Image (cartoon, rainbow, N blue to C red; front, side, top):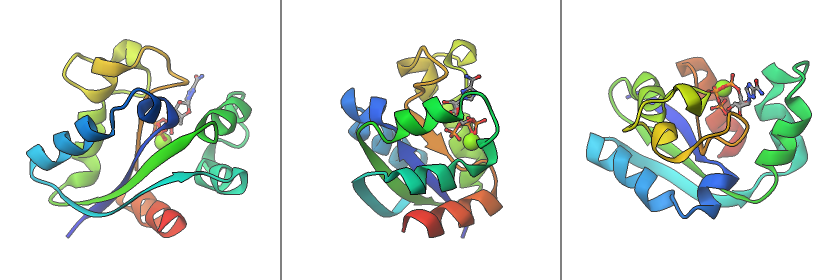
Length: 131
Ligand code: RTP
Ligand code: MG
């Protein structure tokens, strides 16, 4: 069965959104296979976001994702990679419709509440990195 890696980012944890986000995935019918609260070490953050290493926002991204506790999860179910991305909404919350996680809770592209793997291959890589 397909799995994906989902993470409540430090802004989502600070805003007390872990329960809401877990509940959305449960209500959608997905199964939580693993989860933990953690503070991401700098080297893991750089590895996780390695595809963005040469982007101008990379430094800010690593600084932000290591700025507090995150809630890392493995969710399982049919088409969960793509559906998780739909539930999250677009990367830039300004484009995210109300009803999506980013559309309901975020305003800033740099602090957009939640991460979800962008493909089954990314999911496998990220689950191995974090669990
Ligand atoms: P994520 O990896 O965090 O789930 O987000 P994503 O797939 O929707 O977006 P991605 O392209 O992978 O970008 C990773 C994170 O980098 C920040 N970003 N900032 N300033 C900018 O133009 C910009 N573009 C991307 C976002 O915080 C995004 O979540
Ligand atoms: Mg991404």
